[in-house]
Image (cartoon, rainbow over all chains, first blue to last red):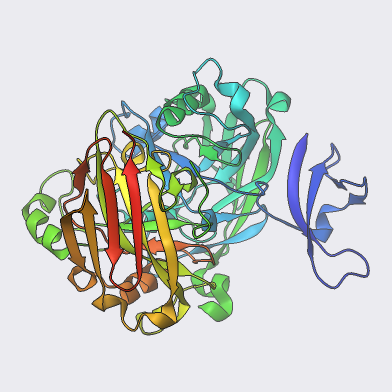
Amino acid sequence: MKHARVLYKGEGQHNDVELDVTVNDQGDLVTAEGTVISESEVTWLSPIKNPGTIFALGLNYADHAAELAFEPPKEPLVFLKGANTLTGHKQNAYRPDNIEFQHYECELVAVIGKEGKNISREDAMDYIAGYTVCNDFAIRDHLENYYRPNLRVKSRDSLCPIGPWLIDKEDVGDISDLRLTTHVNGELTQEGTTKDIIFDVPFLVEYLSKIMTLKPGDMIATGTPKGLKDMQPGDTVVCEIEKVGALTTYIVSEQEFYGDKY
Amino acid sequence: MSTNPIVTGKLVCVALNDQQQLDKLDATFNEAPYKAAPTQPVLYFKPHNTWNTDGATIAWHEEGLVVGASLTVVFGKECCRTSAEEALSYVEGYTLTHDFSLPEKSYYRPDIKGKCQDGSAPVGAVVVPASDVADPQALTVVTQVNGETVSELPVSQLHRGVAELISIISNIMTLQPGDAIAVGFPGDRHPVKQGDKVTSSIAGVTELTNQVEA
């Protein structure tokens, strides 16, 4: 089952309401009451209702580490992101003013469904609710060698689109060889497979839960393969993971994104 | 682990903001892996599993624990891209954070293991309304371990002050009600032992007490 969250203005209503829906095989949205809504009538939200800790992995694909001229890490490079970064499918994300290089990162996200500490690798998958796709944008201009990748690079508003939905783990099955692609304005710019992940989901659940309690709504973004490309306002970027989903994001300028708050 | 009624969103902490520590590390910053001094505030999150309260017992860790206390700004309304001049108008109130962490060895990579232990970030005891604090820069954070003073950090000794930090951080991430910023810790975090009682206070504002698991 695919679980999504959307804003919807029903007939006779003045304000958008948040709805938890499922997505059927035709791509229509179905409410808890069984009402079918067309995708064109809604605004997609992050599928994680109460986002917890957002873990993200750096340099977790062997080919990407080589692309950035890094040795593959011996221990996972984990960083945290704020929930302010999350936005939904088909939403805007912004390119900050006065920068040279902003790139997308198509990533498989494992979402925690059950609280646990000191979880073994063997039991790890029992704690996963399902998967989604995120686009973990980075602003390379802002990298500094303190808590790298620092929050100014990785924790900006809107720069972690996620979705379109959370799909139950049973519906995906084996995640050890899923194809990932990114298309920018229709052109294939990034291609890889989760086979090249260095530290896999069971390893990461064991590793993180040895440090801290994992809770429902926590997310692990598992890193990205090679294929970096700069983004510009006007670009449409689609991150897709086989069996999970395709996440579309529209790049806008900082001024357009913030509007009156700019 | 207990939930904290004060922080419900993001707890952003500022590292390397004690001017005395920055001066001391100046030469180190030019060496690998840093290669240059930081040009921006050095920030880290204490995630939700770390949030804790006044009076809470802090779990011991076999690698040892150090503690630092920080004046903490709590937001009562959305704060997006504010200027330093207007920053303080977004502050709902002031409180204290104890950051219990594993000894700080390096600032190069995010220190998930060191900073994200369960219950390692008590915040409290109370939030004093911003209207009761004329100038946050005039406050001093005093920390005592078992009754003995181990650090005194005047907020004026911070490299970047409260208003400037709010402005910079709110230009990276929109701050929401229930978010908080711990603006700066003493450069030398103090080692604690099992059973130690740690009390930090800001005169006339609030006091925060925690005991390390015996």
